[in-house]
Image (cartoon, rainbow, N blue to C red; front, side, top):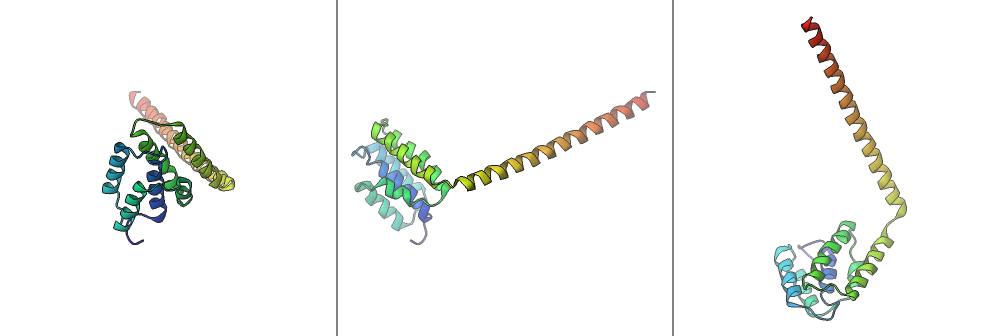
Length: 156
């Protein structure tokens, strides 16, 4: 597809739109919310046509979710999905079960070793930041002590 959003992001939106069909009724509120997304997100005309069709014909949400390659898009899906399922004021058991399954799929994609490495790196960055802050505080304390001594000498 040329133009529009990335393939991963497009499938994120397809999964969001698929949620409108979970309870087998696409409400006016869900249609209105989908319409606002179609207007505000920079989809290509091709992507808009597919999403409009997705509003008419239910898609397999898990199949759509599986196509979301970017971890940021996977995470953002849950925020947009909550808006979709809550916009009609009804979050039913079936929708909750779908959310749980999708979260399971997302967690299954997590590489534990990569996650440990990210945590290790962030701890290292935190320690470095903390060390810099401590050095800055020590430097300021020395300056204050020096200033106090200078003021003490000047008072004599």
